[in-house]
Image 1 (cartoon, helix red, strand yellow):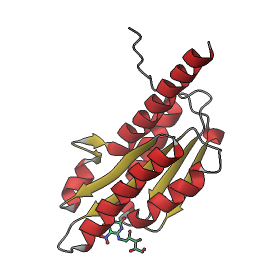
Image 2 (tube, helix red, strand yellow):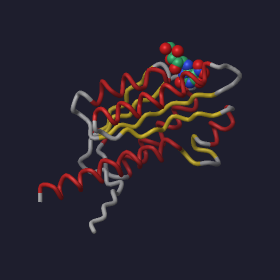
Image 3 (spheres, protein in one colour):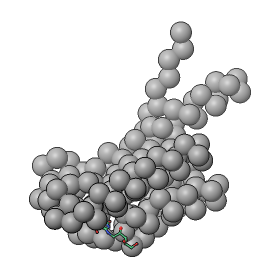
Length: 159
Ligand code: INI
């Protein structure tokens, strides 16, 4: 029975990173983590485009537009939605996640979800290069693994 596992091998892959400016102290650290992961795993600097958008709400639109350009093999979405005490959180975080999942399914391309959804700024800091690692790094590796996995399946179909 064939079994396939992707590895985060970035050589030759073109990757878009869409990052929200809202809560930029956090998202900038997520971006640093993602770029570090991509380049350490072989993605060339020239094969990475970073697209800044105002907030997490705008990420899915930018992701769709980027992926329909046929320029990228995978996309990394980065943002930080922090609950504070506003119900705005639920709309922004929920819709961002739902629409990214829909875009990935519709466009048949991997989108990694590096959008933090936290109750407090401290929780976000812990996940942006703090005690809980860097979710930007993790998302970048997930994007590469998915691109590699389906590259292998396509190669198996052709072979
Ligand atoms: N955008 C975020 O990325 N994070 C948040 O925590 C956030 N909150 O809490 O409001 C947020 N709002 C802005 C939103 O993403 C849009 O940019 C804005 O509504 C304009 O469309």
